[in-house]
Length: 433
Ligand code: GDP
Ligand code: MN
Image (cartoon, rainbow, N blue to C red; front, side):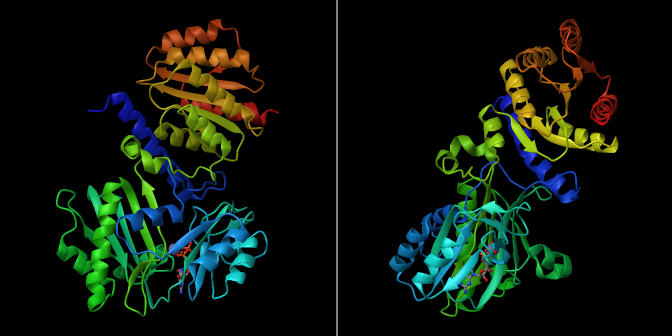
């Protein structure tokens, strides 16, 4: 059995992904985040995994220069080629590049055009509905054999809390925004709940294939692909496999034209090869730096840095700062088994952000020992010569010792009695100026 400490840290990590998603969903102007899990794979990496598990994808190469893209297009020797910018966000087809080029997905019959288009993709930012405003820099493109699509459906496998296990989700109306289909025509969304011990039953795969509109021999093929995707999902410890479009060709082939896979980060220890592929190039450097110290960092756009433990407390801290008229600049989540050196690194990261005008420490000591936090704070204050106001609210395990350490340090630390008080004091400290 995993130690309670390790599983606590794992839960915090997973929750943080939910925090991101939840903050994003609120669309508060104070918090603009990209929904991102910790392990991310690009489409070409996901498709490689799929191909290795017998799932049908197009032949492809990956290129990081326009010339390589041209060469790849020639080597494919296909009637038609599809060129796709590789970024983690979806909606690429309708995206726009900072070079002026429209569309992150292009079809052409001429390899020379592939080179010309790649020239306008690689090194430029691609903005889609799912990226931050400035877009995301494209470093690689996928050059694939294009196939005609006669019908686009949607297929995904998700871990679903509501039914305590995996669910297959599909719609005969794929290719487009699936959220829109779900909102406007919920009757076109089909689900199959999977018993994790029994796996996908033939009947379920067949029924979903039929509901997706696959006819005749295509139905068996689609059911087969669905089962293979489910096997992949289990084998790689995914939390989501999304294929949109899950399409059919006029020649009678069922093909996964796009791929997005999310992973269970708690499974890192048994998925070493996959985690080694992690594409961190789109992370903020500071997030990677934080991850290096086992800290979770989320950048926001206000001016109050938040130093918390646990995703729930992060949310609460964000809310209470906003309620008191302030804006969080970032969050740093310490997680469970904290060491003094981590507290120091955490402060270093928090204050590296020039937007930060105050720091709010909000720690609830359950597993965390408050005295360790207090020692870390005083050390960081001295060594980093902290120049911004620091408001500290500590509660829980060993809090009296912690308060003594802070008071006796002689440092200009504002103590707060509870979360409300802490938020008020932090907001006041930035509005005074
Ligand atoms: P997304 O916009 O980021 O979701 O990227 P997709 O890979 O889903 O591509 C966007 C759209 O391009 C798809 O919905 C298809 O309509 C089209 N597309 C992608 N690959 C091919 C292909 O090989 N052939 C054809 N005909 N269309 C394609
Ligand atoms: Mn897609």
